[in-house]
Image (cartoon, helix red, strand yellow):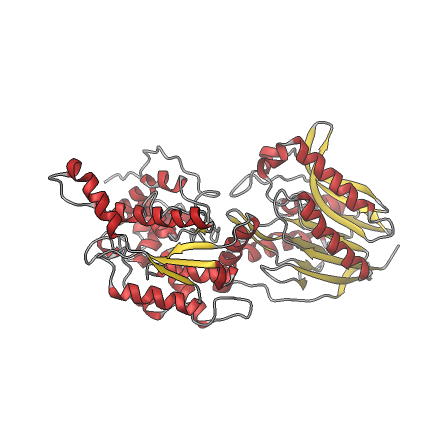
Length: 553
């Protein structure tokens, strides 16, 4: 039995469905591990197909191609190192998420995922079959457990492995990021490590996949629950940890320890990674967005520029007679600060044409939100025309507060392919703008202080009518966001939210707006998941829904 193991953590960014591209990534990382003289190279969960694959795994050719790719990778392990990853795996007519241990030129061991997450953003129980409690494997005389992601979040697997002699656990993961992710991972998995006295090597993927962002932030934990290795957050990374047997326990004696990101920087990087990977993985060369002089479009322009570079961001100001001079100046200043293309296309000719066209039907009726929404839809049409003609993907810019209460125009400012701030409340938008202006990390491409201060400090307005302010029809954003946080993230009864200091009338009105805007959100583009309950993958309320909280008095 060896008393020393060199284990490479290969934190990579797969593309869902790109089996051959992902195989090439794994091949390159494996070659590096081989040159470093490691014993074992560990890759993220479902690295060969990308995670989450959703219904791709129901396609027989996908499963066949994954198996062939894994067999090719296994063929490269003839003289080491061993390779660990997971793949969809068909066995006796059942489809599993399987840990594959590749050694000596073949797939030597297969261990099936026991706990299939079926909550929040996960629906693995829909496409995979639950495997039995996995037995450990033996490598160079060392007994190793191979739990897959959720297997360590739930009870049963870690103690089963310990009962059957496991000395250390190696775990491939596909754990999406949210603000509480790192604390939840270390607490939930650390409990298993501490209780069973089994050190853990945890390897997570990074990258954006539709609405999910994976932060990597891979780590290793000693038997006492101490983190002894940590890889970078939100970027691909690689590290070799040296483990030695000391007094019957595997101890990490050498590994790097990067700081895992949290707080506003983590939020910002998640937005950048989500948008950047959506654009790049779907083959877009450029993005276009409306730059109004308001804070939402400004932060989206800054995120896009940080993620893609200024040469790939195209901004368009589309003024009407309601657009203030300040907004015109602020939009131009923001574009200049970011170094992005900036065009002005006045919408009045189109608005006048629509007014003339609809005049016979609208005769005698007072202007209302109909005319306001026409302006928004003209802007959406204009941006989509640019997208169609020149090819950039349209980025939409509505925040979570507005999307929650329907303060957005369907087929207007909701038009677009992706929304980087879809899961950010308005107050969080302000916080992130202030953070980005105060911080300019070297790998961010948008430059120093990219968002003009006046954009952040002026009262928000859609500028669809004279002297309009968001506060005309909504509570102030700190009030609105606290109510929404209670209704959405915490699912609190109305009375509990009222007890936090809000009027019952405000809370009831916001709850009603939240429910009736569901049909709009179903037609909204995808966007980065930031918090605990985003619209789309997490919060799945029915469109037709008469439920409202009732009161005894």
